Every structure is written in structure tokens, then in C-alpha cells.
Length: 279
Length: 128
Image 1 (cartoon, each protein chain N blue to C red):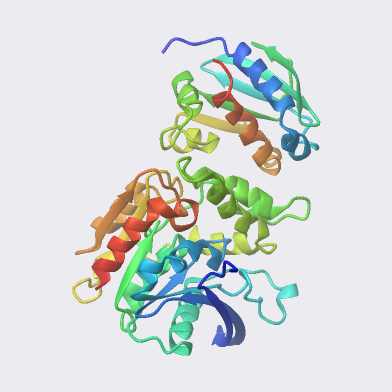
Image 2 (tube, one colour; image 1 turned 180 degrees about the vertical axis):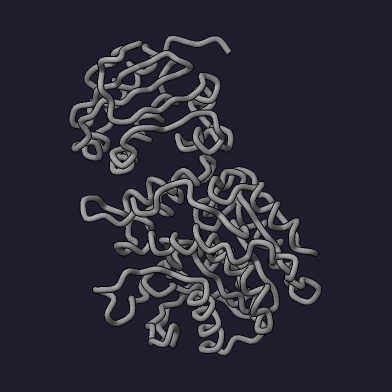
């Protein structure tokens, strides 16, 4: 008997930023839709364990999306002469276009790191299509403690450097294989993509001072943060949660910036708890 | 915390490095001198093609180095625990927590980051 996983993948073309984008997404399960977004420099594979979790997928349709330029989603036509720079507006456009393309009704949004930042942006500015928001390793703003230009140079491998840098955000308690799988995605990231993601993540401070405007009375916001995350620290997440009336916070011990990928067993109960808060 | 002579430990890390074939590959282009300074005690580590060739204790104002890690002894000892606590699990944690600094040609460090991090982590496996 072959060991097939329940995850299936498809492609759909959406329009964002005024151009078509061929998007790859994976899904598993049925029930409450949960649309999941990855961190900077990575792809849907970060969500592989959640999509393979039979108990979770028994009542949830877990969908993970490769952002344009990431994973198996191609960059747009003409990319070869462009400088990739992600923006908040483009990211939001992609999320809303995917919700529409997949005709999702009342989905939960879950995102990690830059995806977590977008959870807060959606909760503030575009809450209508969503049932609630799970914001993982999420804060209002994180300036860089590194030089983002390191990760796109003609004389070095940006992916290998990026992976070695983000390993600082992976907790030592996770299984060794999963910690290295987590780094592999960064090693595979396209040239300049991690840098282009970080340019948005480390410079867009448009949420600062606005978190109090998020209304959690009808659309819950749950923030999760790993103890070992040095990019979005537990203090950063707490500062963010405290600024959102009604938001809840979970600090995950022995976990870093990539919880669902680096330590799936450690992350699982916290994600189940987060889903329950969205019900 | 009393300062310990790090020379035996750094020497053992160099010997452990010799046994790691994958680090020979990763460090194949790394031929640099690195300063590790712990509360004023200087150690100049000279690597050649990924092998630790010499460790020269300071003080010295004559040995050029490419990049330096300066950290307090307690933070370094925490870094070398088998399961380091959060903030002490990575060399960049020294900077983030304010317990140390990384100076010099950082790009050379970053280009060889996996190699150098794995070398530093060998301190968790050798006798203090």
C-alpha cells in the first residue's frame, strides 16, 4: 500500500496588482475553511503537518497558498527585469482574490510571520469576508536586526545565507529533521524573494498606533508566539495583543518563528486551541 | 562569574571540526581569522579552508581579524548548554539580548554563516 498523503494541490490564476498570477495552493479536509499563509522566504510546505492531521481535517478544510514568487506559484510575466518587493496592499489583494477564487464562505485566516502581520491588517481593514484571524509570530512592526540586502547578491547564495540566518529563530527542542526541513524551504527560495518579503515586513509600520481599531467582538483575533522567536519575540507579540481590545495570546514554549513546520507536535495543541477560539 | 580559560575548549572544538566531513565542504572557502573575546580575554582563531589551524590567545594589537564575537562568559556558557535557553541558542542572540556584539566584516560571516554557527555549536559537544 503506497503511503499517499491526503494533501492535494491545484493551480488557479488570479488578478492582483493589475496582473494575472498563477497561484499554487494545497488543501486537505472538509468543513470550516481555514486559509493559511506562509512566512517570508517559504511556501505551503510549512503547513504540511496541519494538512496531514486527520483530526483537524475531519472538521476543517485546510488550504495553504503559495504567494506569487514563492513555492510553485510563478512570478508574473516580466519578472526577469523587476526588483521583487512585496507590499501590504499586494499581499491583501492576493488573499482576498484567493478567497473569492475558491468561493470560500466565512473562512478563518491563519498566517505566520509576514502572514501574521497580514492577519492583523485584514482584521483592521478587511474583516468582512472572514470568520476570525489566527496571527502567528505576529506583531504590529518589526524593524530588521540584519541587513536585508545580504540575501540578494551576485557573489553569494541568498537562500543558504537566509536559511542560516533564520535558523536563529528555530528552537532547539524541535525534531532535527523538521528543523532542517524548515530551513530547506529558505534554501530553495528564488533569488531576491526573501529580501523582497523582508522589505515589506521590516519597513511597513502602517499598523503602529492603529491596533486599537480592530473589533474582535464579531471576528476574534488570536495571536500565537514561540518562546524562541528572536524576530517577533514574546514581548513583541504581547505588546501587540495588549493593544487589540479582546485579542487573546498564547506563548508556545520550546518553539521558534516557524511553529507549524519546525515543531509540529509542539504546535498542534496550540493550533487546535486557536481553531476553537474561531468557532 | 569567574572567567574560564577557553583555550582547551576551543582546541577541542577544532578537533571536533576535523571529524565533521560536511563542515569541510561548507567551510571550503573559509580562510579567515576570527576574534572571540570574552570579557577582555582574546582568542584569535585562524581557519584555513574550513579547518581550525591555530588559536592564538591575546592580548594582541597586531593580529588582524575579519570579524569578532564579543560576549560575556555567562552568556557564552549558556550558549554552550545542550539545550540553550531562549535568547542564548544562537550567536545572534548575544546581540539581540545585549549580552554581546558581532563586529567587523559581517558579510564574510554571513556568507559562511552555517559553517561558523555549526563550529561554535561544537562547544556543546566537547568537554569544558
